[in-house]
Image (cartoon, rainbow, N blue to C red):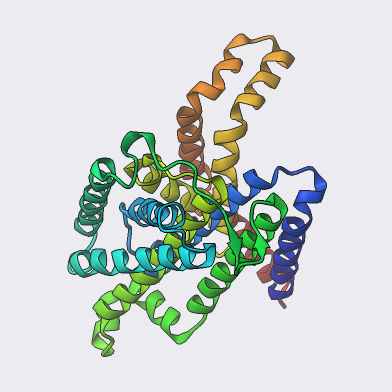
Length: 329
């Protein structure tokens, strides 16, 4: 089973390495990878610690603004801008965590949502964010002074390396003793307390790691696209990452990657798919699917909840486990 999983991950990595030479649009794939890292970071908190945060858009969006402003106004190099954005996400996560982890369940979720809305209104009013117009014209610059990121192909492989490193950090965290404690907290928090673990400290550290990686995803997204907007820090972005995680498979390593690919592809390609259906079926209603992308994603979410509650990859893993158990003597 482990060999098959490693082989699938190797094929995925090989596909991403070869994607620019197979007709894929590099900027679109880079955007997809940024959202995949964002979803994986959120899955570390919800899937392995059991903390449902409605405020992760704050880490993605505010780090995106900080990185964009530092590159455009302060003239920082890309590597320093990415580090600053990641640290911003981590510090913001530490503040959120200190205020939120004292509560559980829906109260925890509502506190993170309220704090994220405060960050949203700060970004709306602050001068350096550009308000409703957003932060435009963020330069990519040169990485370490010599690697020109204006070239999309160069930027693509830098993004791929950073996203893979972020995902490997999550994998290492999950399979470490620290990650086992997080799983124990999710399964039975009172038992973890009775064993002498400082549950609050473990939750806070998990929150900070998740927020920092979300900040890295937002910083990369700004560097790739050259702008940061209010949509990155809006509460709907928090709902979007929850949708990605649940559709892909909560508590699985590959689920958030698959879920983010499904959601991003729907948002960007649903119009083309609708036009194709309209031509094939001669039903003009399908041509308006691009205007109803939220309705389509909502329908897919409902289907996932009703048909396969473990998510896409969760159901596949469950079927593989059942097949393996039947083959055992």
